Image (tube, rainbow, N blue to C red; front, side):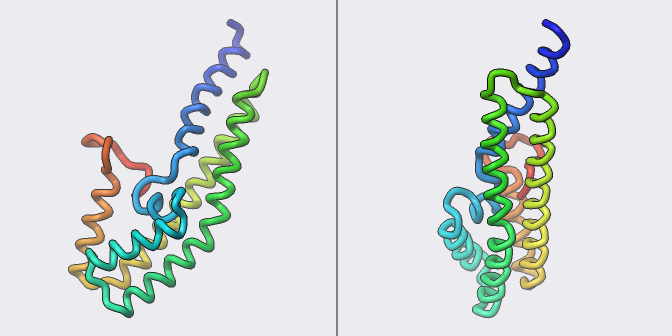
Length: 161
């Protein structure tokens, strides 16, 4: 096998793994809020958080506003991420995948995911600022559990909470 085919095969294998990751909804809290269930999933998560954290009406209203801001900013990036996945799949399914083009698409998809993660972290920080000490402790505990959900073994870092 010549070097060009080896590079293309290696890039294709790496991108196939990346494509699988991109095809799945984001993990943890963001996945519940922004995954396939969209705004409906966010409503269920908001109710769960409000109940577990015993939020006041004022906290619920503020949290709802924060979530709406996040949803408005993140929705276009979620669409972009799905489009990037589709483009990667098309390139990989092509007769002669170009490793350079595929690599550039993977980097772009990684950047999109990083932007979503940053938005989510900002949301979590702003949400935490609404909470009292007991609520913050419970919220941090919930975040820890989301970081290491089903299938994550000890020492396995989650991609996002």
